[in-house]
Length: 302
Image (tube, rainbow, N blue to C red; front, side, top):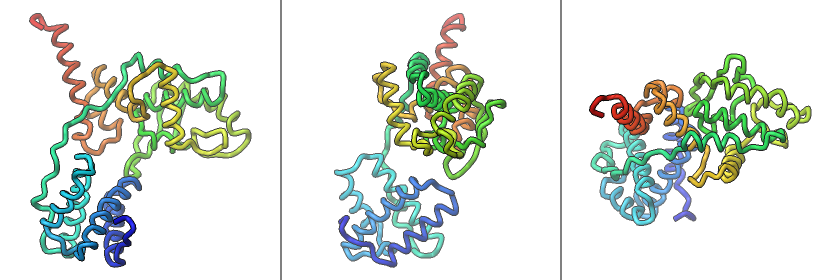
């Protein structure tokens, strides 16, 4: 199936839909790519069976899901159904189809998995792992401090420009999903480490080369997501952390620890850059556990 090429009109149809998604929602490249992969796979499957993408019915979609199900995880199937549903609803609005073939298709029930997090002691061990005698170590400490202090996505962290951070005001301007920007306070500790990095380490790393990126590599380039992913895994080993580690785990730790210390869920939503509170509600289990502990500690019959 992968060796097949999409018919020109089908490919053009998908291009138009992807452009529509970008213009309407400002979705990230990765999200748009996911939509394209899902829809291209289905379109190729339909093409082999001599069926046009705009002529499929519910039975065709059910057959494709049955074909995909044994080789896919429930979450992937759920994403595929969401892609198909979004595409055919768009086609219905644009009068390209008269019936939405996904109308009766149900998404698989997925367990609500809790985000992996770290204890405050583990975070402290991770933050202390870089070697501060090296410029790169000081850079990495500043990155880890900023990631944890602000709950940033790794893509947000590595794309910060020097003009978007104010050490004196302890605030950073972050560009999140859909190119939406938000101002996030970073606290004194992170501001101190970033200030120290800017003064002591960054000039030494750049060696008079010019860059507008806040965090730079020894080559003078902007730090990449992949490079930082490798760094945080290495520091987790040095810190003796045996849990699965990724930059996103620190983002979860940020949200969890805020709630543990009494932050409101709406505040956490704003800081994380979630457009919908339902995305943040995955953390309500943390708030519930904290309330239970407070009740047990302070209520006379707790």
